[in-house]
Image (cartoon, rainbow, N blue to C red):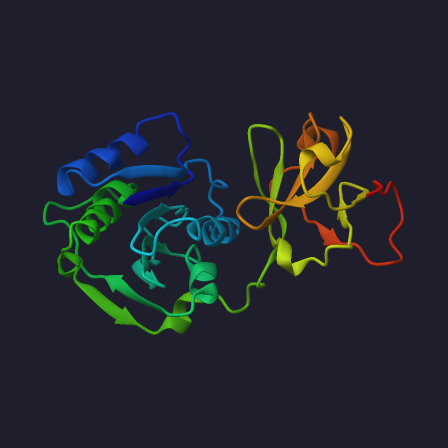
Length: 255
């Protein structure tokens, strides 16, 4: 299958245009949208989401990923192979966490360019979608891949886990770039002026209570039972969070 991960938004023509290319170049291959509203222009935050979500899909999946504020610039077009999964998109850090968390990873720069030229601003349609389709159809050589050192893609100066809000869903829940396993179960999380304690699920809290929990993709998520964490705690993408230490005080929510 081909899985789409973009910051294009569900509305507008962009995803449809990429889907049309995939249907033409890889007919019969399922195409699934896993995220169409990744943090806009933010390959850094998106990298942590992509690494978490990719684990839910089979090892032979093809990910077509476009969060590309530098489109038309000097970043390389890339194919990353990580534990059997393949990722097609810009080499701007978007694949860094997938590569760092993989047991086996390698990447290549895409050498192919369309003979008729391509848009300066829509490489998702004109470059990345055809390559993803060829990979899915069993013709990777058409991308003219050029192997590159893995170190170039790792972004080793980025943290292993990102202590900030990377995504807010339609319920107002705030997803962070922290893997839950990186936060001791007994520790609180300092968010929006409060120290939130951990819950297993929403029914562990009364209506209106805020807490943090491990979401279905293994990330720390902040929620309010039958409420919106983003408005209750005044949260937005990019806001930092912090693991509480014993000296933290404030409006701690009891376990």
